[in-house]
Image 1 (tube, rainbow, N blue to C red):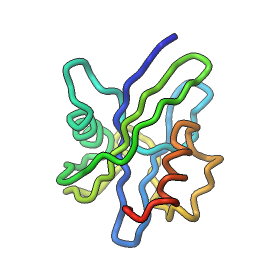
Image 2: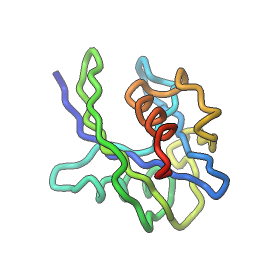
Image 3: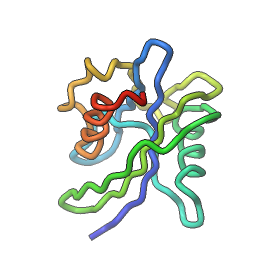
Image 4: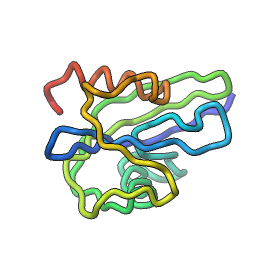
Length: 132
């Protein structure tokens, strides 16, 4: 079974909204939404991957971030280990550089049914925590 290691960012604006990104792919998750990020390359730390992926996908430069949670999600064809980071500050304005849609939403208004299954526990953790 294929195993992936991924870094993803949770960006929050001054209104308390978080950024989600539309997933564009040929597969069962096309059209679902996720926290932006991507695969960690060989020889790369999770933070380096986060910074690279958010620059490539959103056109932003991460200034400050901190680890939020790690989880493993088993799909029928792959296992994904994801490290999520709270991104507290960045420069630039997030844009969908790969053609993906972006949405700023309040965590309380976000329907978990539109999220990638692996990201649902993060939404639940955001509801539980006062850290963010």
